[in-house]
Amino acid sequence: MATRILDRVPLDRIEQQAHPVDLGRLVMLAVVGVFYLLGFVVAKAVILLGLVLGWAVAAVRTGWQDAHLPAEERRPRGVAG
Image 1 (spheres, rainbow, N blue to C red):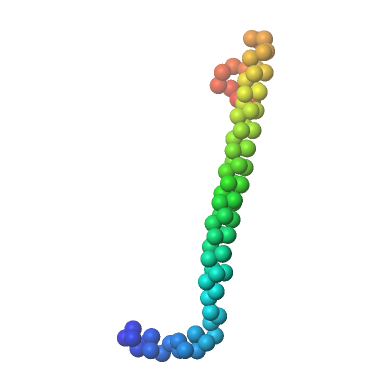
Image 2: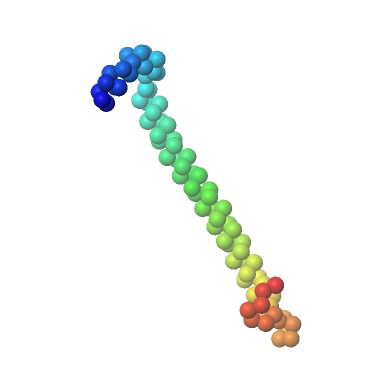
């Protein structure tokens, strides 16, 4: 049954209408695609690293400021805000 269906497919007409593949352009797009993907991943990693670093700096700054407050004005441990 499968051979009957495949026999009905007009491969000659499809090949005439299809554009030939340019191997040089295909290789170039593959190489450029790898560098594009690498740049994309590095950019996302830098953004994430910036967010993490910013949060860490803010946490250190808050801890530093709280350490220099008198004992009565400090926040109790475990209480946010």
